[in-house]
Image (cartoon, rainbow, N blue to C red; front, side):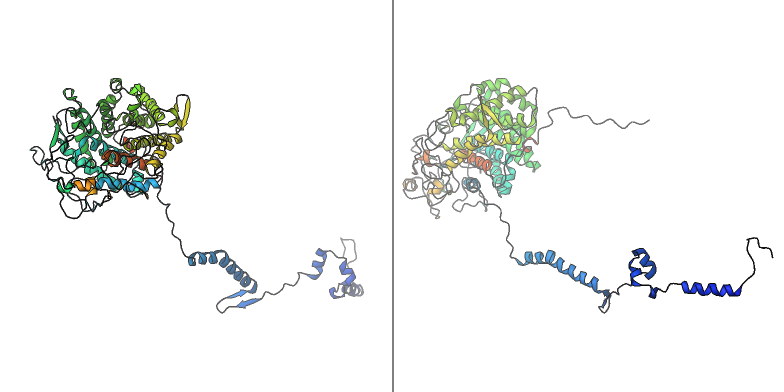
Length: 618
């Protein structure tokens, strides 16, 4: 056979056996490889020779229903212990340690005094009192007031007695209701937080319900209003509200009703009271509209051209006590409140008319015209209108006069600062806004309220302060003035006496007040039989809590004598200013005014943005 590969094709059995033997002899016996030769092999070569290393057998634990490795069991136990110390133990500590309830911060002094100051109004209520009135020594009174009037169904029952006597003066009563409403509008959240919002609404409604009886509030035009119930003549020797010293519940003398056919001042103040209250009761649509209707009617009456005679002129039972010195300030005050209550631009146009500003002598900056009171509304009216400029910035055509009122308000605040020596101050730190005459505290409280509100207006609009001439004044300066005056009233004075009855450790005990000075023992006291209680040197048997008395003299001296009424007699208007100032300053329930509620009835001052065009369709 031909061999194409170049070799013999014959098979030799001898050579084959030799080759097989050689091959077997050359196979490596792994067990016989010398250790020295094995050490010279790298890891890869060792793995070829020895194969994979033997693995350690895992240990398992039989838990009955589950079999798991010892290692897994160990780490599970470790995890449980760690979770217990990190999570479980703190939770157990929190659960087992006695809980301490979070107590709200205690009320500040202003809040404590405010609770008491509101109670004064409960003590002054006339008419059939509700069961929850809260003054145990007071009862129903004045139930026959106005009973002889033929045009008032049920007479003029209700309202408030003005001071320590039993007269219902409608002019200061209206101012007091306006002040309470103003404070409730600006500081509703504070009243709610301290649990007094329902209380102050009740007090306001008690007053406005009565004021609506004093004229035909359902008519659009009227020609008279009733201006007072009860009265007294100077040095009278016949039974009346001053000659007699009787509890309201025991009155047995004639109580005449005064009527006015012209009352620009009283009519405007009544309109302000009803308009402001309509904002407070905006959640009661029916009652709010009733108040607005009444306010509109009585303001139109006040502005009648033929009736522009002060309501008190020539009246011997009004003029010596609550004489009105003018009515242009009442016009501005009433118009401002009517605008906020209705949004009718005719009112704001009237309030910003330059002729009205000229009549009220606003630009002359006469110091006495900077003193806010039941008789002078100018500082309060200008501040109300300044609020409109600061918060709404309405621009033309109101800007010129609003800007003027804003500047004049700033100057009024400057006049309250001792630095500028506009008013005298007592050595003990009380500003003498009525030139050292009696009953100064009502003016001090009103000024404190205006100052505090002005500071809050600046704070709400991010205005840091204002200028007194070339001197820049921080808003804190005017707030500190307000606080210092209220602190004086509450006891930070040379006598360390609180002039709010029932507040502090030392306060007047011989308050000039008929109801508080006569024992509540079911024994009727006659007209002159009460004189012994008037002249007694013993403290009043009934505490008229919250009453702010007239106050000290210009030397910081005070006579706690019942017959010294200029020192010891409280008034409705004075306490309204006190309440307003206290709620403005309290920080127990936060700080600041309600920015928008007062404008709730004010329409947009600029044309409304037109609606977007309809979507384009091809």
